[in-house]
Image (cartoon, rainbow, N blue to C red):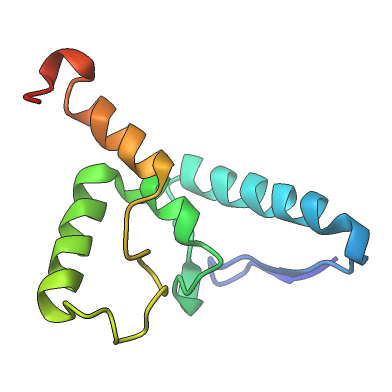
Length: 111
């Protein structure tokens, strides 16, 4: 593994074979989860793009994600500006579940 972490960002280059993609993704999740547990962020200096999108809900929470998505929809209602980057057009299942929990679960539902 080749990495640098001195400036507070952790980048690694891990050689892997086609049959090891799942292991690589699991390692990425582990590294990001550890960074978040230590008060760090998922994206570092390179931004989110598509590779870190699934970690944003853990980092920022469902209310923040919902606010960001509403701003994106207000500024880009046709989703033509960088579609599928940073924020998915629709919330993920994990985000929907987290939002539900943040609002108090089933008992708090107004539906």
